[in-house]
Amino acid sequence: MKLPYAEPYKVKMVESIKRSTLEQRKKWIKKAHYNLFNLSSDKVFIDLLTDSGTGAMSDQQWSALMSGDESYAGSKSFLKLKKTVNKITGYKYFLPTHQGRAAENVLFSVLVKEGNIIPGNSHFDTTKGHIEFRKATAVDCSIDEAFNTTAQHPFKGNIDPKKLKKVFDDNPDNIPFVVFTITCNTSGGQPVSIENIKAVSKLCKTYNIPLIFDAARFAENAYFIKKREKGYENTSIKKIAKEMFYYGDGMTMSAKKDGLVNMGGFIALNNEEVYKQAAIYNIMYEGFLTYGGMNGRDMAALAVGLDEATEFDYLESRIEQVAYLGEKLIEYGVPVLQPIGGHAVFLDANKFVPTIPREEYRAQALAIELYIVGGIRGVEIGTVLADRDPFTRKNRYPELELVRLAIPRRTYSLNHMKYIAAVLKNIYDSRDQAKSGYTIIDEAPIMRHFTVKFKKN
Ligand SMILES: Cc1ncc(COP(=O)(O)O)c(C=O)c1O
Image: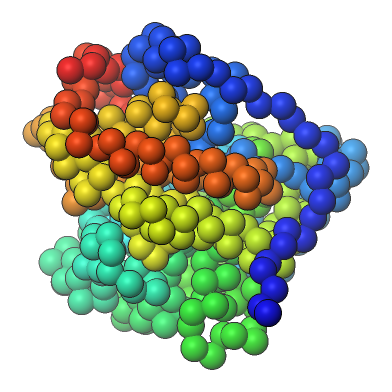
């Protein structure tokens, strides 16, 4: 008999989570203006809002915290982290930041100018936000399969080199870099193959355009390469990661994902000139070069986290847990994005609740229902997140209307996954009753999803 995977850790400390009643949840979500970001966490039973900064640190990380060096300049924890980042990525220059979007802010302050085009594979919202804030345009060059929720492509995060080449040809001297998000959060936690990274890298080199990774989930991407790409079966995760980075010129990192810490980020680069300019912005926005918005202790824990996150056993249990939830839902007939991504299961709201008009934010409506029925907090990745076109101010309707159930790392058990699947089955079985959604009554001019207010139709 093939043995199932088992978590390569045991529990040392637990945190209580509270159940609530249907009536309570109806009241709470109404008060929160039907925005799940507005709910306090004690009103949530299982929190799948994000896998960002919500994971559990290991005993080794907690003990590293105690050794954190809080010196303003030249802290030992900084040097240790710098060494680890260099070992894992191969990039020479390193700037710590307080989180991923801060790394984007610093790097894009150097690289992005008004009118620029920045191609990539379905840019993450903060990445897009930082591009558009600078009056530049993010162009999605993902392969077509990325937009088909049931296409069984092993690397749906891939960039289509033909699309990319066209963007390069149409925009001479106007592309400061390409962003390659590994794994691609927006298209469903879908991985990118080494073969594709190589092809994109080659194209970028031909056009002399730098390739920058958005590497928040680089270790999960490396795991998929090991499992799915021919020739990598026997290569270690650390080696695969280093090879991926080798084909690029640098990276921004949200360490809250594959850094296995609750807060942190960084930039790593090979180009000294870009590093020098970014260093100035880092000092202005984040802090001195040897802490950049992080405590010494957080840098110490991150150095350990990066090492743990690039171990096969950890990654196997992490990704298999997510796959377990996805497969249970498929068994129940619930429409989910396939193949199951690395960090989350994505519900396909276009197929789940086609009865709710798109103009009434059907994916948001589904996320709200999931909270009301089961106390589970997911997040809309659809029209609300896609925001308005910055020029026309009209709603942008993306191809996919998804609800993301992001699974925090080393946090929930398999029974939690079973509970989530059962709640969704019940909602799915009564889906015909869903006829109307929500109307926006208040929204911010950019990144509206965090603070938007709705009323029920
Ligand atoms: C792919 C990707 N890039 C960037 C970010 C931004 O990172 P942070 O939340 O640390 O600012 C995220 C966060 O979820 C992400 O998923």
